[in-house]
Image (cartoon, rainbow, N blue to C red; front, side, top):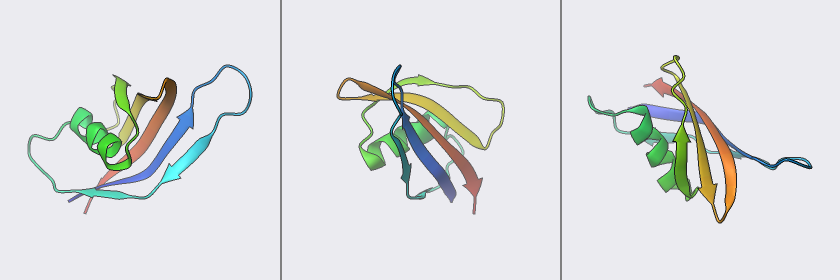
Length: 84
């Protein structure tokens, strides 16, 4: 079982304070063929976060980073991956 924890979205905006929202952990059945892109899509679908715009390819296997867009507003999505 993969657990996605510390899920957070941060509004991307040029002026003013960005809205930051923390989300509950998400458990996903482990699969040999699951990629970071699949994990990000699962988080987006679970919390109705809009559409995936870009996926950051960070070297750490336990970190997810992406940019999503919902209703014309862009958000930075970050999370941690751990196995249980």
